Length: 153
Image 1: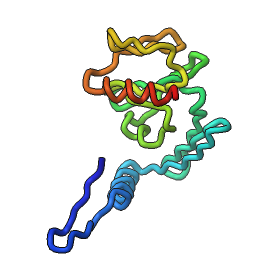
Image 2: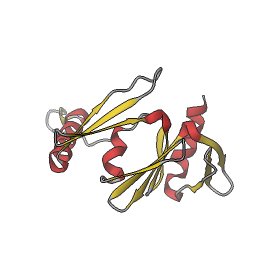
Image 3: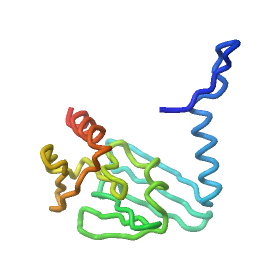
């Protein structure tokens, strides 16, 4: 879904999704004073480096992240080994830079589908390999179910 502005007289599209998303990304990065340098290789460990203010770098191995939980203006990363780390940015900062197997199941939680054990369609919950169960938001239910079944195929 994107914004497209067209000229009624000529029928030409003046702005395309790519240009708008680039402008929005630049505005967000300049307001947060951080840049994202992402390197994904789906065949090997997907490591992303998040760089703040040219001196603070945060390297994350996305293959080990089970879920991201919003804690106010902070984000708690939960890893497969049970460790958690609290970072000083909100979920909306990390979400656009996540690998494709992450999906937002509710306002305060993003789940890595590599760690999903079961999808409970009756109670609208997802069960993770770390024995956590997360309720799926009513408005995100259809997106999560379609994502889950397309991920399995």
